[in-house]
Image 1 (cartoon, helix red, strand yellow):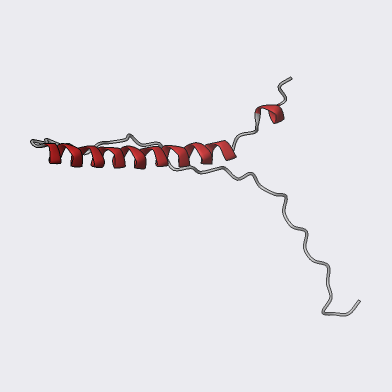
Image 2: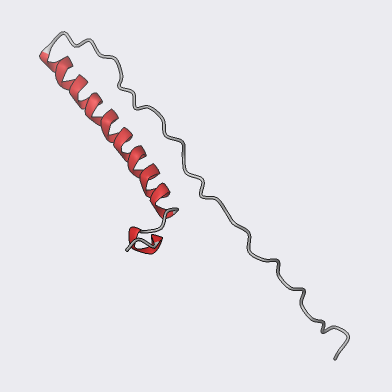
Length: 78
């Protein structure tokens, strides 16, 4: 064997890694006090946007957690 050629060291056994998902947080809506129809419409737009952002966060966390769990068929259930 040439002196520059040596056996590669064995790689260590794979270690378990834990799935780290974002923590679940409460959804909050901005306070509003509309006095006119126009303000009421704006408050509705702001509220719908806040619910949309909250739903997106919940979906992201649920998807992250689902990636870390086996499917029901893979869990050994018959």
